[in-house]
Structure formats: C-alpha cells, structure tokens
Image 1 (cartoon, rainbow, N blue to C red):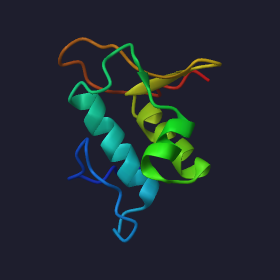
Image 2: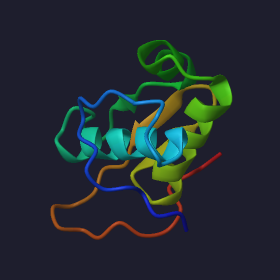
Image 3: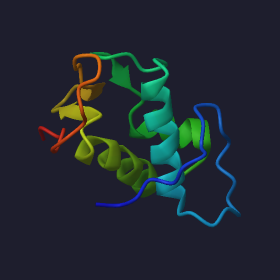
Image 4: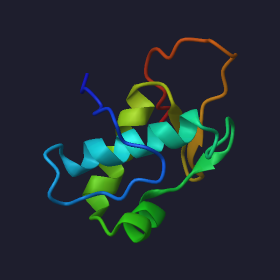
Length: 101
C-alpha cells in the first residue's frame, strides 16, 4: 500500500516542483474532496479526462491517481459509467479494495 501524503486540501494546486509524486498529490486532493463532501457518497468523481483538464496532467497520472482511492476503499469503478464514491455508514472504517472493474 502506498502512503498518501498529508497536508493536501481539496482546493490545492498541484505544484510540479513538490517532492511527492504528482499522482500521490492528486490522490490526496481527491480523498480530501471525498472527506469534505465535495464528492458525495454514491456520486461520481471526475474521470480521467476531467482530471487531465482541471490539473493539466497526463492521462496515466490521472488514472493512477484514481486507482489509489479505489484501492483504499473510497471509490469504486462501474464499467462504462465511471468512478463513484463508496457509500458507508458514519464512522465505518475504510478497508479492502473498492474497485469493481
């Protein structure tokens, strides 16, 4: 399991000169947005193309940044539909792989 860097908020710009890999910083921003409700449970998170546009990043970086929250149980994929925030009970621990495809 990869350690997601701390200290990145939902509105952070992705400084290309920062020490942490770009995909880890973006994953931290996505997880922060899930945590504060910007991306609500059961709702879609931006896909690869939208992340590429918003952050000016490569397709592979966007994809890798989405896979980490899925592996951590924050989002799941629905084939042909996109990435969705996993609904869970308040206080429920995140565990397991959230990816379905």
